[in-house]
Image (cartoon, rainbow, N blue to C red; front, side):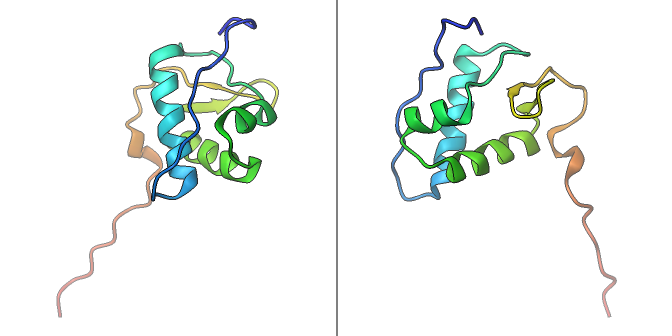
Length: 102
């Protein structure tokens, strides 16, 4: 994203956990406006724009990282939209344990 271009998101409010609402808003905005490698705005700026605390934003960003949508940039404090990967999204999911019937 160019430095002058702003990521446009709306404040979120519904009954789901706030971090999930923020996650959904960011996914929608990134799909519409982002390209792989684009930097995500700093936490202070993004939390103010969304109207949420940095704690809530960090949880949403953690979820986005787990799902492979964003990744840490060269500067570990900055995040960027992830490059497309051949890895399936559930690649890091814990293995399913099947117990034999008794």
